[in-house]
Every structure is written in C-alpha cells, then in structure tokens.
Image (cartoon, rainbow, N blue to C red):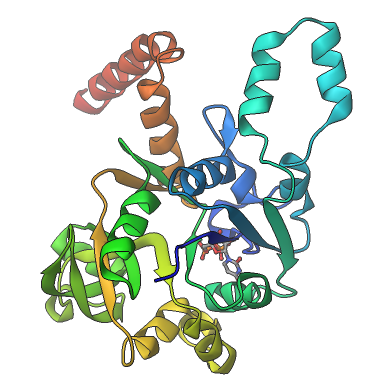
Length: 297
Ligand code: UTP
C-alpha cells in the first residue's frame, strides 16, 4: 500500500462569507492569534507525515506563496537588531526548499475542480486534502488521525465530527457502517440532508485521504450544488467502486471561513497558549460578564 506523501490545500475560493475582509486579502491569510489560518493547515499536514504540499491558488492569492518564501531583508534586519525570538519563530514556520508546489485554478468553479487542478502534481498515488479555512484544534491534528486510519484500512478516508442531529442540513453527512479501526465504514454521503432524511449526524469536516482515481471522476464531473463542481459528488461516485472509511476527530474543527467560527477559533487558541492565556483571560471574562448583565437588565 502506498504511503500518503502529498497533500492538496485549495486556496482559490472567493471567501464571500467573510466580505469585506476578503475583498483584497485571501481568507486563508486571516490570522488566528498570530499566524494565518493556512499556517495551521501546513503544520497539521507536516504533523501527519506529509512531505509535499500542493497549493491550488487563484488570482489575488500570491501573498500565500510569498508568505511561505524566505525574506532575506527581514532576516537581516532581525539579525542586526538581535531579535533572536522572532528569528526562531520564522525558522520554525519555514518549509524546506522544494516542499511546496503552487498551481492555479483559473476560475473558482468549486472545490472538486480545485482538487482536480492538482492532478498532475499529485500523480498516481493516494493524497490528502485539507480545507484550510477549517482549523483543527485538539491534542493532535485531525489529518494525523485520518492518515492513521488509512494506514490500517487503505481505501479512502474522510474525517468526520458529530453535529447536533437537528442541524444536519448545514453539512455533508455520511452513513455509518461497520466499525473499522478507530472509525467506521461509510455507507453513503448526502449533501445537506434534512434531519429526517439524514443517515447519521456525522458530518464531513474538511480533511480527506483520497485515491488518485478521484481525478478521473472529477475530470468528467458535471456542476452540482451551487453550480460548482463538488468534491462530494465525485466521492459518492468513487464509493461505488472503492471503500470509504470515516475517521472521527477527537478535537474540534473551527470554520474560520465564517465570522463566528473565526472568533471562536481566536478565543480557543488564545486561551490554549501559555504565552497569551493570562493576558486575555481576565479581559474576556469581564466582557462576557458585562454582556450577561446587559442581557439580564
Ligand atoms: P469554501 O466553499 O469554504 O470557500 O471552500 P469559498 O468558496 O472561498 O467560501 P465562501 O462560501 O465564498 O465564503 C473551502 C476551501 O476550498 C477552496 C477555498 O479557498 C477554501 O479554502 N476553494 C473553493 C477553491 O480553491 N476553489 C473553489 O472554486 C472553491
């Protein structure tokens, strides 16, 4: 069985849910505490053993490529000023040379189309997909669990979390089959089902391990929901020929493409950081108490 070595991170979407912030800045560069959301996805991929990352970018997204490049002027200035802490931070996030490829999706035709744009760079091997606006928060990253399950089961793996059973219409939902490793076999996938029609409350949370046969299906895929080429439609088709397994995530995924998810992620990551927690805990607690008093009045 081939190891999962490559990951695709699509960053070509327009981020319309986060306008006006995303009018001139990619939503993947919005910061959670002090680093852009795309940095969390790269760290998660590296933790899961990924050796190479393929970014699918679009117009106005070149800042993402610049972010992962070396900045000699900045390094020289920090060195002259003796700012060793800042230099160490830059060093920590710097990917090794050649670890990243960038390809362009010429028009935002949907997530499925974005993944298809990476086909030649990925080639004939299993690969991971991380939606970078979904930021993973937990003991270990979500993708590490999905890759671990893939190593046990082969096939394709989708990371899932449980949602409120009354809110299934907001998500892609999978059907639950027999237990497999720390997860279970997937019997089907439904996009945004009403609670009565939902096969379970396990929703697809933005991390995948897929076999390369998905590319052929994506290449033939008609537009689906939202007039976009949908990854879920292609996975549904691949499910007819190949096994899919669900890897339940033990942590929590924040949807940083939405205002509320982004704010929650900032609070969760700030409160989890030893160097920030004490600086923000009291002010946040006071704001919450004040708000509660206002609501009660
Ligand atoms: P989203 O659907 O969350 O991104 O896609 P979006 O379309 O930018 O968001 P809204 O709904 O307009 O606010 C998840 C990921 O897939 C990428 C996005 O950049 C995001 O990281 N994506 C989406 C593409 O790369 N291409 C697309 O055509 C669509």
